[in-house]
Amino acid sequence: MQQIIIDNEFKFLLPVLDEKAFADLEADILENGIRDSLVLWEGILIDGYNRFKIAQKHDLPFNSVNMDFGSRDEVVIWIIRNQIARRNLTPFQLRYFRGLHYHAERRSQGDNNPHVQDSTKPQNEVLLSTAAKLADKYNVSRSTIERDSKLADALIVLGEVSPEAKLSILSGETRVTRAQLDAMLKGSEESVAEIAESIENGTFAQRTADNAGANNRTLDSAFGRISDIIKRELAGLSMAYSPVEVKTALRSHITALEEIYKQI
Image (cartoon, rainbow, N blue to C red):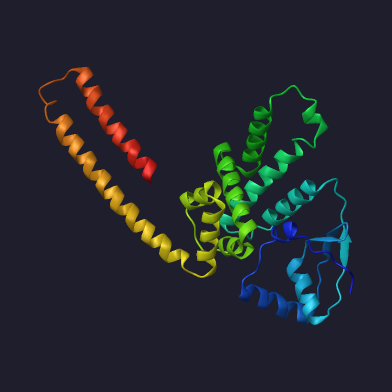
């Protein structure tokens, strides 16, 4: 069998099939053979991981094609575009791949790109133009691309501690909120390890439910404070129409609502 190199960075860009999908692909290959060629770059597999795994398992022949790229980031971008073009990604996986695309494009415009080094354009403008370009490509807002980049960052951090936990999230087996992703990104190495362990041993969902209950109690308290403010600040305004008094009362509500917003 042809010698194929497996690169973990590229491997994790290729979505893992669930058991049923893998079994269906395996049954089809056993009946019809491996019809689509594996795609390689300098001997490294960049498309066809599941087909290759089945070929190894059953000692089946396969064809391969080699593609030429100038850098690893070009390979990453190609893999991402190839996966998105297949339209078999979940919304969460799509967000992850858009975030990875942003990072790969940004790196290609960074220290390794002499055109950017020689440019007089500020680096923050380069980053903004990258986000704007991808926003246009994917028909989303620039802020969506920026949020997707943080999601990808969080999963990269988690994946460095536990590839299994990262795959559990990407497969949809474990669900996470934006706040939990932010915690992974900003947390210490120990806290990320705790999250990874809880995902691996199946206690993460219960932990999330407990936190949700605590958050709900916090919000109930916050809403109670809002109600008190409304009663206290607006009670006397029915007879006083001073703009200053009205603005003062409204500012109290706005401040309280901003506190609730931060807690969600």
